[in-house]
Image (cartoon, rainbow, N blue to C red; front, side, top):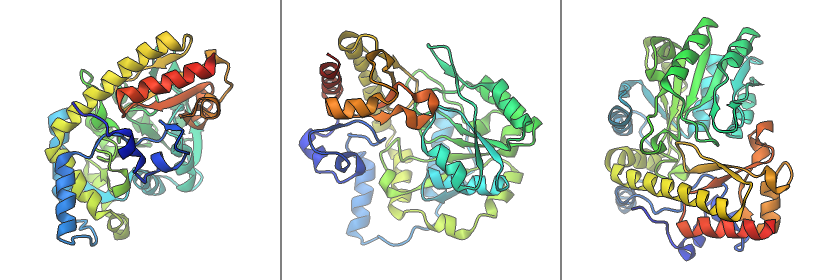
Length: 381
């Protein structure tokens, strides 16, 4: 079983999770893990340091692409051609560079709140205009509003920025819904950029479907943003992948400036290869730890925070908390930070559908989950 580093070791880290707030705050906001680096990745990075191998990455190195393709074939039944995979800095760069080339300035791009907050900014950075089509929510589960997406495309939106699996709610879109989405987008001659950064963290017993695997239409108009940065906690090492799966999109990918791939981090490229190739047992154990923490959170909240609802998903190490019953306003995370010393992700940052909600990071020790709920409970009483 994957276990988190102890608190003194975590406090020595210099990443954003541990340096944003004072030491008396319990940080459970940004998507970083408290787990140790997978052994195969640590060994490869240490070897690179010993060899003073700290120069530029080689964008033509197929090692990481082949490791990811093999992983996707094994886990998802889909093997993209490594020759159709290109590297860059991170998933946000994949999104922005893709949008810049798939739309014209001022075009509408559909996003589906509550959704990863940078989506709002990345569309604008690329020169587009945000078109919101919120997820449908029946208070038990979320799903894409496919008629709403169809209507938005019919009204002039150019394409869809898809979160797959969906952050923050952990929604794993079904193959049927993604097939229908691909049909709708094709009918309007649109595009899909599918952010699949959390896909390797799909929970045991749930089937993840890559967007590019669902139909010829999806492959003709889609690009996937893939990375090991969430699965193996590599965000600071800076590597992500453009993945395409058709001749037209391959020609499109080949038109990207060389500089986009030369920005890739050499350590990130190395760690991505070792993660997808030699760290799968670690990944499986980590997913088990995350699912155990999710069940623990549900028990603790039920007992100590009656009225708060854990909106449990089927992927990621994040959980979505409906905290409206506490009366802490539209942004309960702000109240929790001030009155409980717990740093959660602010719900309204995910869109209007996030008002009254907060996101909590469960890639931590079980004791951290218990302490967080205890602190929140004391603030509520």
